Length: 275
Image 1 (spheres, helix red, strand yellow):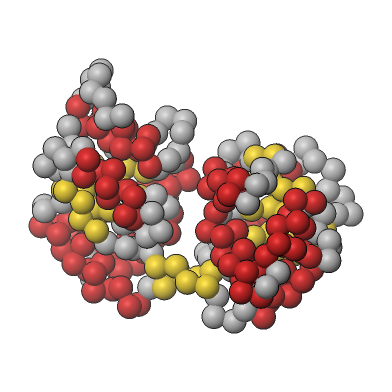
Image 2 (cartoon, rainbow, N blue to C red; image 1 turned 90 degrees about the horizontal axis):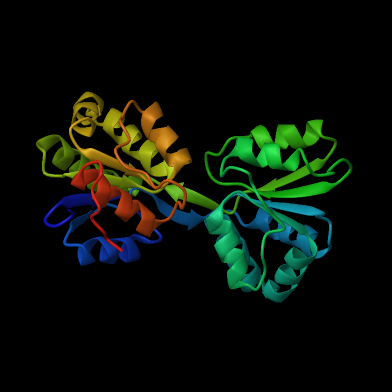
């Protein structure tokens, strides 16, 4: 059902993998990295946070994103303390918001001690409310533009929050590519778009507003099929006023999203297999 379909792929870190998966099913991937990811410009705060981690000053470490943990480990590697950082993480109680930070942990031989009940800040808070964190120091690996609700929750629970941000999203340099994607969407040259993060949704909205294309984009997004990798991203799509046409039911990864897209295009009750 993806044969010949033009699918906008606004992925960054896993763009090549996602594109290959789509093309194996006959789709035409239209690449547009909506979010470029870079280390924070000033590493001073990250270095200091790593020092505290290695000094065993974190009883609990909350991992929001795989990107955040990967970047933290890269900072540690450049500082020559990666082994010490991994050892310190192994000794801390690790809470992962979702599967991506859990995957990065597995890559260094570790596993989360607990996963959030749902891959959201609310899910994290609900899960952590069952833990004894009063008097504990909790390191929190944040993500750019993320909610600041968790640190307030930790303070109210009697814990000491120690947040850190390891990466940032670059925007301005890619405006031209994003505008081109919007123009293709408006012209009807794109059949589907697949979002894998809330940042991608926000970025598309921001550029559309900046270049006076918000209304035209809104109309276009109601004509195409929009896929979301999971409930958090789907919520961002819906908050933008756009309909979510496909989403995996329970496994929020790239391959299940492609399967969900195929089923959506095949129509309800289809047994088309893309696996």
